[in-house]
Image (cartoon, rainbow, N blue to C red; front, side):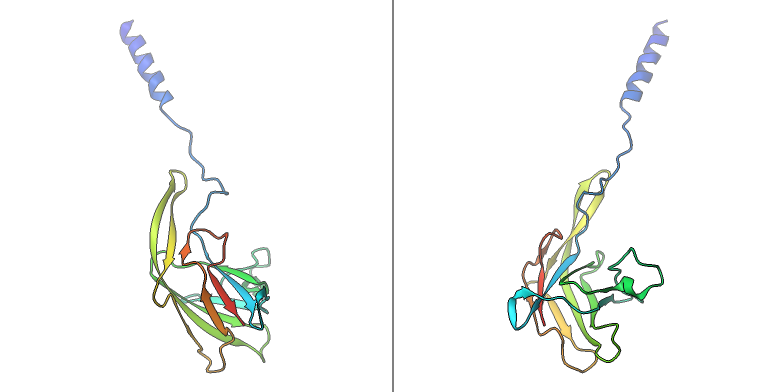
Length: 178
């Protein structure tokens, strides 16, 4: 009888130590994207919408999806016309290169600038359910390099580093004037 009670107690304590599966809450901050805000070069305090901007990372064919609700084959999924964009940096590298194509839907006035971002990464533990996220620190010296692959003029006239610490998407990290 003592063995049965001991076995029953052991079984009960064993079950009580089990936990329910953890689920990562959708509101939990994950690896942040680089936030770029565009400003009017003639009025630097005023934000300015880009016109049909398409952003394509190295190794990507289509580009970054800005409008997920649009059809899979619709080219508008990869285009935005706002004053702010958020782009993902590579978590397993220290350099990410992107083509920024302004007026991408207008074949006569397309202008492409390429920016190479240089940074360090740090993995930060979030929770058992969510795992780790990566935060980024843009380099102090040459955090980005801008080039003009088309040989025409740069459409991004000036680029300023506002916040080199990319820990959240709640603030602008880079200001672009055009």
